[in-house]
Each structure stands twice: as structure tokens, then as C-alpha cells.
Image (cartoon, rainbow, N blue to C red; front, side, top):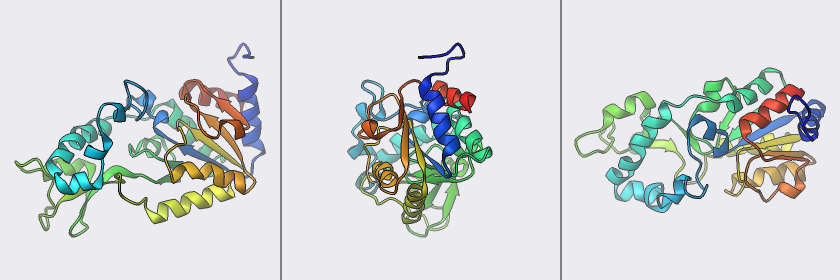
Length: 253
């Protein structure tokens, strides 16, 4: 039941769990960035992967086989992402960290918005659009520089060796960065409470992190519109808009 302020028992319960925990960690997915105007991947009719075949545009083999087709898809997408700004859900998570109530944040998102909102310890397990790197000499270019790397053939080439440049995001067919996954596992193992925000918790290996938290004695709280494999194991499940739900939890704190 909601109070006059819009708070429910679930919001109050989650606030209590956060206050009681010695270590709280957040795990975020595409849903946390939807209020910033970035579509998620699987919502019927709206998700990115309902409109294109990810194996044709977001696989490492697609990049190697036809870099022009790859960049034809990613170049405008990166330009759009570069203009997006954090929303109050990002800001709420940054505020939790600022208050000393959140030890770190693991995100599946590549959009940089958690850092832009002020979050300090951000583990980007799927990489970031912040940089792109040459696959031949490992030279790195910031997002603002990448547009200048394209020639008439529509392919980004390294200024130093003319090798093919690839965004520093994890594509299908690639392993997740070892250092990032190690840090993510350490956070999950040490957490008394994991806040899962805006994720369906279905994409592995990241989807295994809530299980790691549970196995080491931690608890789960889930804030997402969709159902997840962990719903029945969560202490709290909030299914409303992530901005509203996180705002209410902050108010309850």
C-alpha cells in the first residue's frame, strides 16, 4: 500500500535493507538508461534486437567480415549515444554512493551515463563507447576523435598504422574483459545486498552475479519492469519506472 508521499512498504523495506547492509552493490542493465531516451534490447516492438539481427551487426565476425556494414550501423548509434544525458535513476545511484551507501556499480551498459552522473566506482563489463582502439597497434581514440578516422569507404582507420579501428565494446563472440569480471565477482561476493536495476538478468555471465551474491550470504533487491529468473529469491521486487522507484527509495532513506 502506498502512503500519501507515494512510498510503499516495499520502498521502506528496501531502504531498511540498504541501511542495515555493510556492503551494497548495484548491477544495472539497459532499463536504467531507457528514461534517457536509449532503447533497451528486448522490449517487443521497441528493443534494438527486435529490429535488427545482432549476429549480423554486433558480432565480432561481422566487424571482421564487413567493417563498412558494421560501422554503418554503429556510427550513427554512437553519435546518438554521445548526446544522451544521465537521468534521475543514474543520479540516484550516484547519490547512494556519495552517501556511503553503495560500494560499487557493475553495469552492462556501454553508454557512459553512470560516470556522467557522478558514480565513481563503475565496472563496465561490456565495455564503453568512450574509446575505440586499433586492432593492429592498439592505439586508442576517444569518442570525440573517432568520426575523424573515417575515410570515403566508411571505415574507421588508425591514424598511426591504417589498421581497422573497433569500438571498445564487447561484441557477440568476444570474451568479457577479465579484469572487469574479476572486479565484478569480488563486489558480488562481498555484498550483503545487491541492487539489480533495469536488467532482465538473462545475459550471462553477468546474469550469474546475483547468484554469486546469494551463495555468499547476500540478499537481492530487484528494480525492473520485466520478470527475472531471480524474482522469487529477491527480498524486494519493484516493477515500476526505475526513476520513480529509485526516487522513492531515496526518499525513504
